[in-house]
Amino acid sequence: MSDYDLALKNGFVIDGAGNPWFRADVGIKSGRIVKIGDLSSSRASRTIDATGQAVAPGFIDMHSHSDISAIVYPGAESKICQGVTTEVAGNCGMSTAPVNRKNLDILRKYIDSFFGKLSDFQPWSDRLSEFYGHLADKGLSVNLAPLVGHGTVRIAVLGFDMRQPTQSELDEMKSHVEEGMRDGAFGLSTGLVYPPGVFAKTDEIVELSKVAAHCGGIYTSHIRGEGDTLRGSVEEAIEIGKRANISVQVSHIKVMGRRNWGKSREIIQLIQNARMNGIDVTADQYPYVAGQTGLYALLPPWAQEGGIEKIVERLQDSATRERIKTDFAKGIPGWQNWIADVGWENIMVVRVATDRNRPLEGKRVTEIAKTRGKPSAESVFDVLVEEGGRASMVVFYGTEDDVKEFMKQPWVMIGSDQNGIKPGEGPLGGKQHPRAYGTFPRILGKYVREEGVLSLEDAIRKMTSLPAQKLGLRDRGLIRENMWADVAIFDPLTITDKATYENPSLYAEGITHVIVNGEVVYDSGAFTSARPGKILKRQS
Image 1 (cartoon, rainbow, N blue to C red):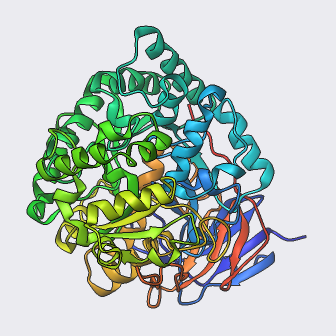
Image 2: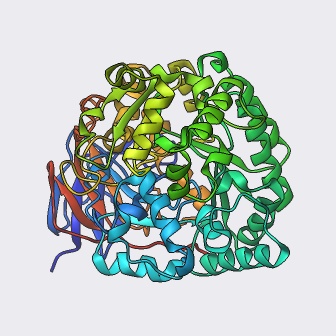
């Protein structure tokens, strides 16, 4: 009889706590780490020789949208090959439950505007526990840690109305959040730059955050703006944390637009001052100077009221187009004006829904405008109408200096802001942001090995124990005895990202084995059929 189900031998262990690496074997049994030390005299059902390789806790993707894609891509291949074993899902205010059947069509079109035609595959559920039950029945390669999406809750109660809730409507929203938290969600997420989140005032978010806080959850936020309005947006997140007495996570922290470059130091000081005053504010980031979102997000808030169908309808009116172009030129107080922040030349269309417009994928708006013989704004309006709003863009906004400044902060963790997918398959098999395939290896290759921005041990801490601590996961995120055996084995001398903006669907290299709950899901560069992932629940 074997002492262990799996033995990892001869590697150097990076425990995830930031400690220096040490040589040890790791014994795994019944899904957990049961021994760290010398296993030379022990027997195992299987032994993996990790000579010359790092044995680290599996990476926790602090900002993911894989809940929306998991029913189609249960293998999460793009994440597994990065060493990711747990994903925090339901970010940016978008979760797939709770569902109000009356407003389901609005929610479906909303989600499709970001992620392609995925709504047809969803097992739409009235509550979060039912939806995640469907995913568990399907079988997953990674663990998922759910959040309740404020946008989804607001759609269930208010649809896409650009107004404040009545007291009874706010109470209904609070009830939805409490139900999600009791189902095991880890907190509340907002997407305050998008409708319907952009329609919500601070007081509304505070009241909902109090419910999450009472249940022991956190508040994560795609803040209202990351360009000219960055400081005020971070201040709002801090205010929410203080008033609701809740732990705050600033999602994909960044500085957008050339005229704002260098403001990372100002924002870092703002957050550190809040932390010094007892407000638990942390952040996550992806290691790129461009992001991806729905193309319709370029429009001012008033143009987005009513949902995607109404957006497309408005854009067929010439007077409405002229009003939007005026807002692009003059701005609206408090609105993140992407055009003013980055310019048309830095916006690339990366995914469309129709074959007719497939040639547009990978082209900048200025290129599309030249080909069509129309101004950039008119070309974007036309594309949105032709695609029924279902088009995505990559926005080139930043500078490496700001990326590195944020990365060096001890309270910044790592998140891909992307779905787990597989190249060439399903609705998301086309053009994506390279972060879908390269986020974590890029940190370890470019920023650790090549540029020395982080030590190897600290980079692993940011990917493992730091997010586990934020989420309250007491049995994951470390190589310690009695922890769940989520493990990534990789070669620190060769690990690298391969995906680019031009060719974004290339798997990373250097990860040799990935283990989830004691089962091997990635084996010497090959995906296995194992689906040991769990739906994690907040630990009270």
